[in-house]
Image 1 (cartoon, rainbow, N blue to C red):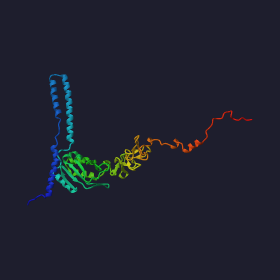
Image 2: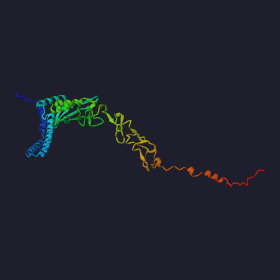
Image 3: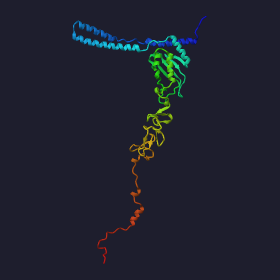
Image 4: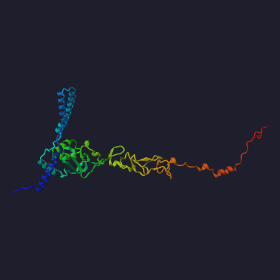
Length: 351
């Protein structure tokens, strides 16, 4: 009686083998510890030179070479300490899991998540639609670059499949995701350790848990501000209904900072609004026109037909004062001419 594996099991075993090989590729490509060979050779050279100085009784030269050798030994010790620190702190290049562990992790992931695939060296895990505090954020893909598993969060991309980003930034698709990079918060170190050791189920579970939770203290954009906009004038984040866009530059501006053109009623930011030189009315660039003489911006009411502002108009003439009326001229012509003044002799004297 022959026992044959089902096609599904064969496929899972083949995928597990591919994943395991990707996890091990980093171990094959990772260079070994870089020992300070140049510093060691320099110490050997100075040690031989010191022996020669002693043999020939070159006391002054011996003191100089001894000092140089001491410095070279110190540099060598520093490099060795650096290499030792790397050896103690770096995660192992080889995964700590077996092929069986990888197969079990993939089976558990397939049972818990909507999709688990391997694409171009990335383990791709699809999540359910995420909803946080009545904000629908949609489903995500967790894409792990297995060849970069020792880089922690750097090996993970979080891709929104049906993005519902914050209004403050299109690259923020989740309070803890910006530019497809996850801010794992307290889960950063456990996630990095799980990836470095090749524990795929633990790594995916940690990343998914971050997506399913919300911490306002570590959010790129808080949910309270998710639908809000930042006023370009005062910088305050306000609800979308309490903001508008400048009709000239399209910058977001809150209702308190927006100004209204008094001719066309367009809402503007302070940078795009101007005032009439004549009456100080608030105007937009379309309603303001430059005086043909001095170039000052004026409103329609303050411009004459020749596009002149009040300061540049010719003074109005008064016809009544410049030319006498016909009735006045006739009265002056009919009046008797005045004679010379009377002398003292012509004045009658009293008795």
